[in-house]
Length: 414
Image 1 (cartoon, one colour):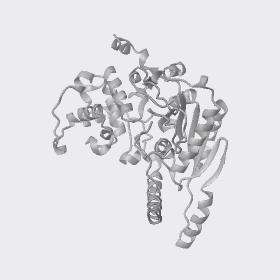
Image 2: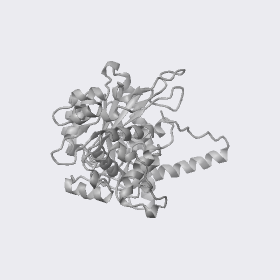
Image 3: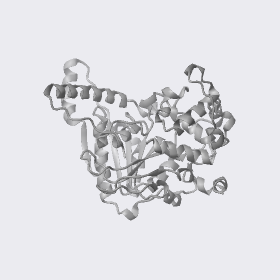
Image 4: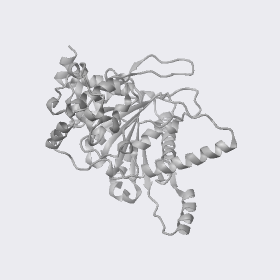
């Protein structure tokens, strides 16, 4: 349930003209930002454990790896300088934990972290250094701040398997309107069956998949843009360590809002990185999702056609988004003619299982197309096929471990 309200309508002609002009400028800016290739956002090269240890030293976490930072140590009172210039490396983890515990979502913004590199990598590092109880605390606070929570955490070593976080999500609760007059009681989301969607890319793509998902939850529903999922556009930093992780965010409907497209509680899962590099994670998402959205650069479709066709054969509700980059003609007059032509053809085609989308269009338009498919798939899905995060454990083959099955988590319950 997103609590921001849509802007008031402006009735005066001059004000409307001004607003339209500003919106066009905003859309042009948004399109420019979203045109960044996702290959620039997520490094394709797997970092080694030695690289990760060097990074931990840079952000003040090396002494706490692996899993040595306790909830008690992380939350004890510390004197952290109010002057940013006096903050030391050893303060960085505790500054983050303190502000997140105070439900200040802005601490996930890179400009507030005082670190070199990506906030996404820093969060990944924090989780690998946190003990069971601290993990649970952090994920609860992420959810309370309306931020996406990690549900699948890749290991650090090359031979380490991804870990499904079920015990760590135990304290994440949500409530929403079940109808126009009543609020549902708080529910533990780890055990709540909901309609689940997965977003996966094949290869490098010319826009940010994460930004599209943020718009599915935000602007496409009449809400303001918010950093639900952290993206490259938010920090302009490539990630090196958290590739292969899967983040989750719930969309909770507010009945009675005309702008709202999604009418059911919907879980959105975002795989960070290229599907071809993370086959175990992709296979896991295929198994647990009610609807699968695949992103691919149309010019590179032949490279991934076999994998995409195989996915469509094995699973029913698969929607492929072919991203199209239009070549620019030189010369002002030719460019003007091209723009006039492209304005009618930027959505090249759409059928039951795919759409061709010109990346020059506003990304919100693509988000609305995705919302329409989610609604269609949701209507065609029996509630008996909804699954909870706890249910996902039955889909964990030999390549995925489950935190709840670890003896250390069982001991944490005692």
